[in-house]
Each structure stands twice: as structure tokens, then as C-alpha cells.
Length: 117
Image (cartoon, rainbow, N blue to C red; front, side, top):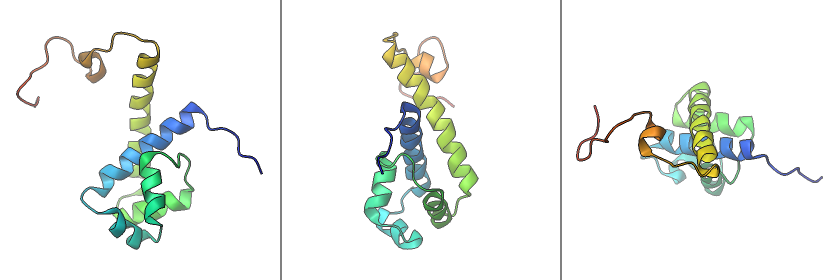
């Protein structure tokens, strides 16, 4: 069976899921996560890199369970990140002037030296 090429939207969602998974994993090693959920370490690494942009629902559920986060929370974060990635990709492709302030939703000079509160 020949698999159809992934759409840009599917690739973006895969990257976002990988970012959300890495954030949820925090300081836990890939090895520890693999032992907890029963997946291969390489599978987890590929998902985190976005190389497996459409993992099976049961795979994502096993990861969420092993990380002790709700599947819904993990998916919601991935959806939010996907929207952010898409906005940046569109702006980059249009070759618009990418101002940091526009990307983070502020105007005027950025406060250097201190993180905004």
C-alpha cells in the first residue's frame, strides 16, 4: 500500500506535537519515558523531532499516561503550538519583515536585560 504524501498542515501538527511532548517530558529522559509507556526510545525521539507527524492515537495516549498528563491537555497544547508555527511559517514564506514584536504581540522597543513580567 502506498501512503499519500503528508500535507504541510500534517507536518506542522507533527512538529507541534513533538514540542508539546518534549515540554511535558521535562527532565525525564527518553529512556525512562520509553520504559514507562512501552514504546521504543527511537519512536519517542522521532515523534519529538516531528519525523512521525501522525502517530497513532494509542501511541499518544500511552505517552500522555506515562507522563501523567491528560491526553486532552497534551493535544490542546499541540494545537495551540501548531497555530503559532503556522503563523510564523506563513509570514516567513511571504517574506514579510519579521519583527519580533509582531510575533510576540507587542509594539515598541523590547525590554532587553530583563524578562517581561
